[in-house]
Length: 403
Image (cartoon, rainbow, N blue to C red; front, side, top):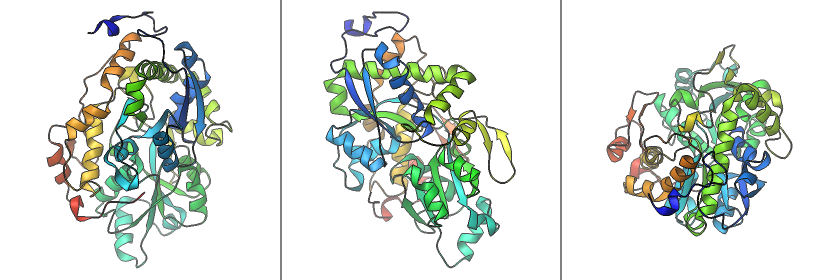
């Protein structure tokens, strides 16, 4: 451990490590989603000030806009899709290849795949029925996701493929910003969607179809949003980046501490400046209480979570590598990258460990494993082989998707 790392000003968390933040006022981007909660809480409930920062929250209208503002420097950091950060790292979809940084994970779980009311009326309320319908009907179905390299595209593609539906050949895929999903369902422009909450829950509440799968049913405790920035920012302002991690870590821990904290956070999120959606659409799934529009209700075993005693927040190397394997699987990458090498460059493990250590937050190993819905085992040991192991794939045979 370096001398700089060893300097702890307050064992209880206080100001953190070493020198004060180089930059004290930051513009932080977020999308109108409930999984932006820890960033919003950090900025508004005193956690940022505790670590010498003022966070100016800036709600974005689309992931593409958020990406562009990160690259221009208008935003210093942002609540971001995992795959957005790695898409920019590889220069996918027209954005210039730029060295990026994942400071920490923000949440796990909590996204959903919905089918539209017309499909439900036609008797399509399961993956099996959707496969039959897609192959029997003349018109192609259209599914919406939120960003071509993002998590929702990857969950949607993974789920469709697990049902025997090729997401690039058998259906059409379109990009719709999260808050616009409801309008697209009402206008019958889309037959299904994958999106973060509360938009899936609100669609069910408004009778616009059903939730056919949750993302946690695809991969329990999967990686979802991250706190992202350019690598230039993390290198130029390391004390600031560390302080930001600490502020968001403390906010994450606060949210997960009690149901009371979750309820108060849901109330905060419903405000006009943040998610701007009815509390009735936000709170139930925020608390893990699901109903799918088909008469089923349950308390989810793997609900949206923000901290999990630190298990949520480490920027795992294996999580980053999984998204790269899916880019390769679906032809976004034409050849295998140096999976582990790229992940080590982007995931800011040293900064994260310094921040977590100062707050006495447990630090798990940087690789983890899981068995996904289709029975495949992911542990990061053979990413190239994993990308080729699926029955349905595109690899280099399909053109890269434009953003």
